[in-house]
Structure formats: structure tokens, C-alpha cells
Length: 318
Image 1 (cartoon, one colour):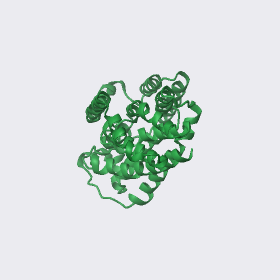
Image 2 (cartoon, rainbow, N blue to C red; image 1 turned 60 degrees about the vertical axis):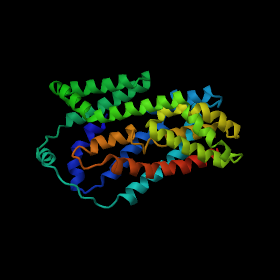
Image 3 (tube, one colour; image 1 turned 45 degrees about the vertical axis):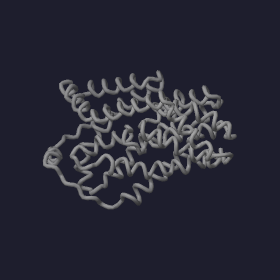
Image 4 (cartoon, rainbow, N blue to C red; image 1 turned 90 degrees about the horizontal axis):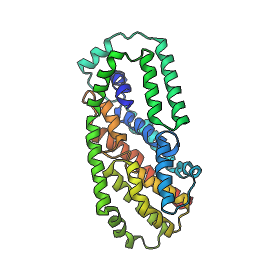
């Protein structure tokens, strides 16, 4: 939700700096994905405690909430390394973009700096985060932040409807793709597609624990790539993966890392994921950022490959 507000006004500056937007897409996707995988706050609280922990324990893993950040630390470290490679090496060279006349005109407008808006923004951030942590409600925190922005004059009352409409227009593609991906998830559940996929590679695994971990991670990557949401993937994978992991002798902590990483795999590099659709919606306002080439492929390479490697290390060592 913050991307359509934050990114488009900065495109003119990025263009003048010749900043490669693929690096920006990698940075935003990291912020969206790595934080919920590791920090049990906000969406991380939903992912780690409400979904991952519940499904692990429902299927016999016997894990406590305090163990989950430890289980996900190595996979997230892999994402940190991928982020550094993307920013420092892969996309550090200048990249030319055309300056659209409309964007240039907007940038030429003089905007008066108002220190009061900064104060209002800080108050809104503290209030939103404080209420979210106190009452465990993202909706209450977000609504409070929006009200403070409005009452503080940062967002004018007569502008709220137009701002909402522009946001809906920008996010329409995301909604459509995620609805289709949700339908795919329901088909996978109804047809037992994941069970068939896992059973088909069962003979290949044999008694090889390391190979079992690798194939489970790759299977999770294939499933999440289609669904586009690690949140929706966990209930599908946990039912099969937890008994299978325990059967192979993985510890509860390793099982948590295996299931969490397998579900998160593909979220960063899926065409249907909000972690890639969001950056595209902001970076492609002027039509110069391709969703597949500039968001999906860069994030897939720099995050999914390290996640497989470090997720496998976590699974076999924890």
C-alpha cells in the first residue's frame, strides 16, 4: 500500500541519478519479504505465529513461538547476501531512462517544505505501530495513522477520495493476478496436487536426508511460484512436509525452518506475488519497468537461489 505513494514521486530523481530500477525492486522486495520471515511483528506476527506455528503444531512438530526467528535466521541471512549482491554488483551500473514530459512537469513544480508535516508523519508512525503492537490489530494501527495524516493536514479532506481512487486503479492488476493465484491454490488443494508431486519424488529421495531437504525446498518453490503467496502455501505444505520431515529425522527446529523456507521460496520471484507486483506498480508508472524482466527475474535470482542454499543448510544443521 505504501509503494504507490512513495515510489512514483521519486522516479524523476531516480532517472536523473541513472539508478537501475531493478536494484530498487530488489530492495523493496527484500523489505516486504525478509521482515515477515524473521520479525514476529505485524505481517511477521501473522506469518510466524498465526500461520506457521499453528500449522507446524497441528501436524505434530511441537515448536514454540520463540524458536521461529532462530529457525528462519539462516534463510533470511541468505536473502541479505542476495540483496548485497544485487545492489553492489549486479545493478550498480548507471541505467538510462526516458524522462516523460508529465513526470518532468511534475518534478519542475516547486513544493514548499513544511516541517509540521514531518512531525505529523512521526506521530502517525509511532501511533500506528504502538496501537498495532498493543491491540494486535494492523487495521486499527493503519486507520489511526491515516486519520492523523488527515487531521494533521498532510492529506487534505477533499483529496482523500481522489487518492483512494488512484490507488485502486494502480493496484487493480495486483488484485486480478492474486485472485487468479488464489483460485490456483484452491485447485491444488481440491486435486491433492502437492501430495501427488511429493509422492512422485519419494522413490528418488530414498533415505538421503540432505536430498530430501533439497527436494522439499524445490517443491515448495514450484508451489509458491504458482500461488504467489507464502501465507497461502504454508497450510498446503505443512500437512505433508511436517510428517515427512519428522520421518526423515529432522528436528522440530529444522522442520520449522524447512516448512517456513519452502513456503517463502517463490514469494520473492513469483509473477503473482504481491512482493513483486507491488514494486512493479510503483516503478512502472511511466511504462519503463517490465514486471517480468525487471522485477520477477532479478528477485528470483537474488533471493530464491540463496534461500534454497541457506534453507538447506538450516534444515541439515539445526
